[in-house]
Length: 276
Image (cartoon, rainbow, N blue to C red; front, side, top):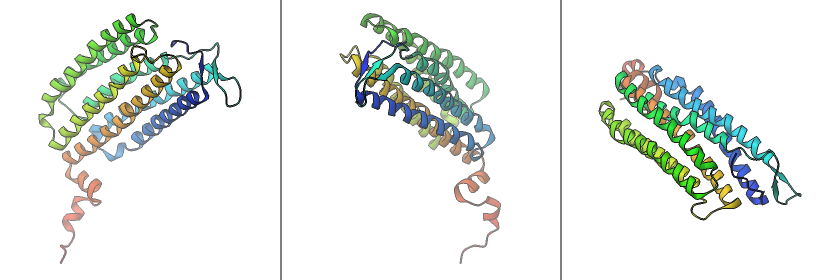
């Protein structure tokens, strides 16, 4: 459970409610889009799209649980008035269960879409997956801590595997991009920056109480920050993975590129009469 916030104003409640609704819709329909778009990439890249759809699907499920927990936790005191905390309480742990599942999968889809050699892929994943799980596990005690000292200690411990993940993504993964086209390499570079930028929102939201933002304002800021970061780190990230899969499919197969990007099979183009 999160630290109990005993009441929210009507505006605060509506803000959190609408942000949860936005995040849920984004996750659900991004997952559907990625699943139905598998035929737009070559078979070897479809696993990355399935994993990305799983990430959004898992997140959508947990946002349903978060949504329901929030509705049960805060009940209206009067029409248009404030909302008071009920005995049910708000369960923040749903987010950490979600992250424990989806963050390793995010890193898995990043490696999968590049179709790296088996040994390289295995080496990267054996470092990224345990580190990402450890980062989430160490972050949760700080999330539920009331005092600043334990919050800072657990936050610092969680930062250690986070920095290791950055090292793997920006140093070791870079060595594996030699085989990629310049366009794919550039997009992967932006993908990593997107991941770091969105992940940066989480510790900022985590540390709101340390920055002097507390009570209901900190609660609302944290829920909005986490939700927006989730949409960017899962939905937008998944769409960039889809773009990379399309680019690599076109690089690998000229016929696919002709059909998908020019509208006609290469064989038909070759047999068409030249324009006068």
